[in-house]
Length: 105
Image 1 (tube, helix red, strand yellow):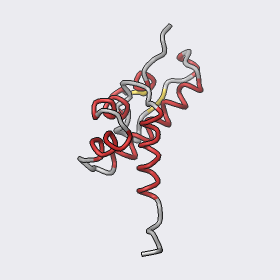
Image 2 (cartoon, one colour):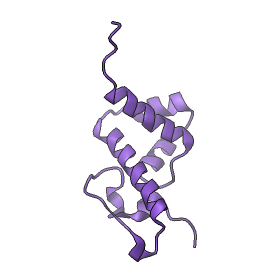
Image 3 (cartoon, rainbow, N blue to C red):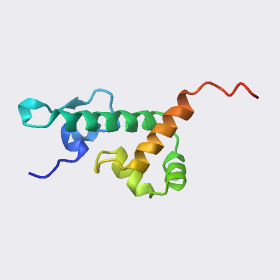
């Protein structure tokens, strides 16, 4: 059996990266728990970015980290597993969003 896409593990699939109320497939479905954990982490990262409602975010992250806007979309919607570059972009968004203001002025 081939590896499922991240959104294949989300119930409903369309909730991936868009809804905090998403549910997840589990052991009863014969799915590896570690794979589900990674899919959930990707979903949470994509959801964080989605909640910013920043229409320029995909283009800016694609430019900064060297991938296409389509790749960003595919990873954010769980159509493909996130690459290292996309994980770096998700992490950067979290750091820039959650970091306290620079105290040096």
